[in-house]
Image (cartoon, rainbow, N blue to C red; front, side, top):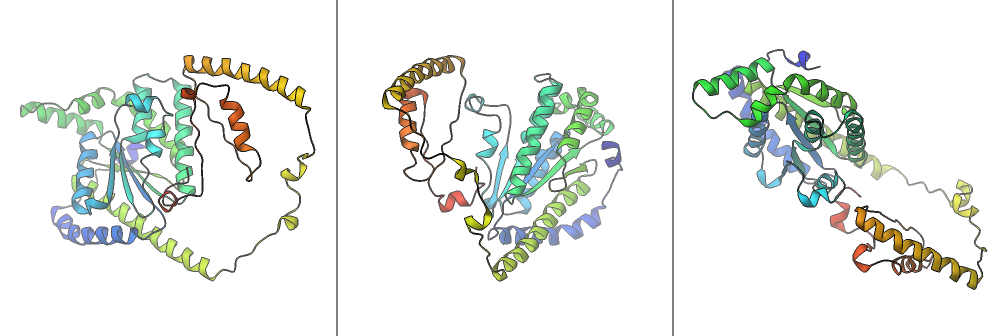
Length: 344
């Protein structure tokens, strides 16, 4: 996979300088057009070339309007993040519709690092890769444009960089040194992750970084082409929706559904109900205390029409628990700000 990308692509100085001005203008215009779009853009920048990841991030801030770039650089999990599901820190940073978010490292880098450093085994790595695939698919299905770049520097080129720094008396980059030492071990793991998570709707773009001009043009062109193509599709879909006559299917036409099978006449004698309720609340009190000790979290989701009994059920559950051990989250109709983000 990576050998196919190591072709030594090169862009001359003259060609680079001729293309950059037009490319920068087009990027800015696409960024401004995006602000009125009904989808967000996520640009993921990760790779075995730590230096290039930082340089490409700086380049995007230089060539585009930094006011509308929402940038996130992820390192080790903080104490607060460790108290939540692993992907919590990614969900809460997702850009709103019309916004471009840049993610450096993020979920791909952390998965590879955890496996290379043996913080997780093969089975856990496979589970993480499947989680990443589902996470990315959820974003795409909700309308997000996901652009993923793996910036790749061949091992020989990385070795030359380290030697050059040593020869000139520069301090060696600890990240580059670690990548070089783990290079042969890490690359097969990266390839496994890419095979699992590269899809038609969110493919990986492997960009060789030996030549900085080629790297810069490839990444920025891909971003520009992705946004431009998506804006065209989005506009066409908008016109199609405006012309289409809405068709509604009545419940009777759709046939029976699972709610029609519920027995609404079922009853329980009061004395029997009270006895069972007391027993269950005692059991729940014990289990909630165990869960607190074991640091096990739970989520209970209640759906139903108004006056269906959601509040009554919740009150009877919380009566058996310590108030410090639960939080009730009422979900009403989404606000305009909430509708601009992924529904989760």
